[in-house]
Image (cartoon, rainbow, N blue to C red; front, side):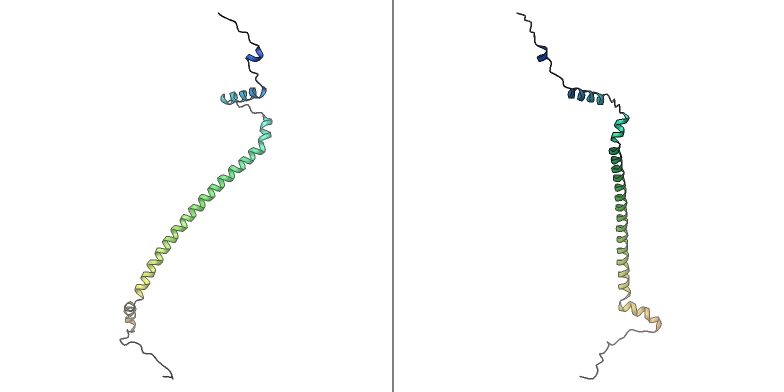
Length: 127
């Protein structure tokens, strides 16, 4: 009842190619946090790293500049609101002072009095 099964070694174990072994070794290295970087690899990647550094610096500069512009725009918007409210208050004060009764009161000390009769129209020649 017990039988011994004999299999060919080539069919029992799947062949592991070089790519799979390299991938497995790379994954194992990353899992172990074992980053052995050779100086030649760093030299090879230097232009890419400089490019990334340049992009990061450009991004930081751009974000700082945009924040500065936003703050400045908010400040100017607040200044416009303040000037508008000042304009409205000055305009209302001027309208109150330019009324006929207010002008008459201001000119009374100088001897100028308000007319009691309406002005008449002067015509020339043809009637």
